[in-house]
Length: 480
Image (cartoon, rainbow, N blue to C red; front, side):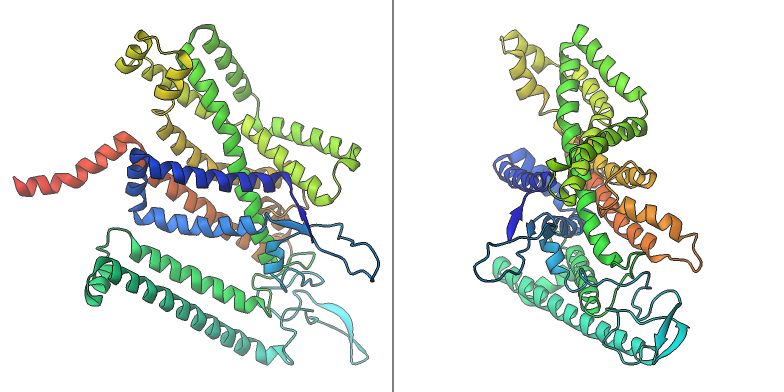
């Protein structure tokens, strides 16, 4: 196989390296380490982190692309496929390669609509059998429910075995490290009296493990979430849409962050004509409707791609270029809110005593900004960044719904919702595409929002002070 590196793939790898670097920085910084310890001791942080971690693993597996090697006779040069595949496609086999003629309901063995076909030499109008879903059944009418129940029981059994094995190893490790008895360790775990929220993490792990096992076992013989109009699995399309959502949320956030931080700090600290110019720039951008500017930019890029077909070798690279450009233009049109927030906080910080003392001792302006202003803004920047992530994920769905988002061939939740618009008006109702897209988006956005709230409580000094006072107030009353 031949490795393929898309623009967004390189971004995903860069994000991974940045996360590893940031973890190293947290280990060496006492204040950061204390803040993160405070955040991670909250059950909601660990639960949402586990859910987001699963989606990040899915996105990373879908970001390792390659061109499969084509069969060739001896003596011929090695040839590669013209279309790239990902590691996730290989993991999802045989479901990712199973394709039906059209719609089929979840866990069904027959098509969704009646068709006219020949059966035993006689033309009949009935629900035809699916090529993949339930093909191992001889009589789906009588065997389908029993087969699904059997596979469900096997999946749940394997899931419970995995959970029990992990919990046993966890308890064994806790007994060894804490040097306490088994009953004591188990009692603390069941009552939630541990330092870290292990009980909440165990419940989340159990639910995730059972759900993944159930989907995995049933996907070997059925389309768990049905198929779309082209006969492709909705589950596969939804899992591949996770990467698009996380790339748009992450890459757009990284575009917003340096612009807002640089312009906001510069305007708030220097003031004067510099402040006036920067305010004029972001006020002008904020006055232009975002959808119109994004639509015009995406259409210009599409015209460039159509006129320069040789720049991109495959359709996947063309769709990835449009996705990358969409993140850039979405970030340029969305930094104004954070820029205003950073400018206002900088105006307040520049008047404090330690800033005036630094200026009196002759410290240069760049050093004052980098060593004194920016570190005291990072709690606001971090909070706003995490909260904007979920809004960018939703923005992609809205833009793709109106036709100015990602390429129609790119797997995304917006494309799924746009497709479901026509399906909801059909008779009978095709409901599973919209339901699947809603469920996955709900989990991603909810986890990101819960994580952002917890990070705000841990990193915002005022919120942390209020929570500390409220938690210590009862003990003070008892002591008095």
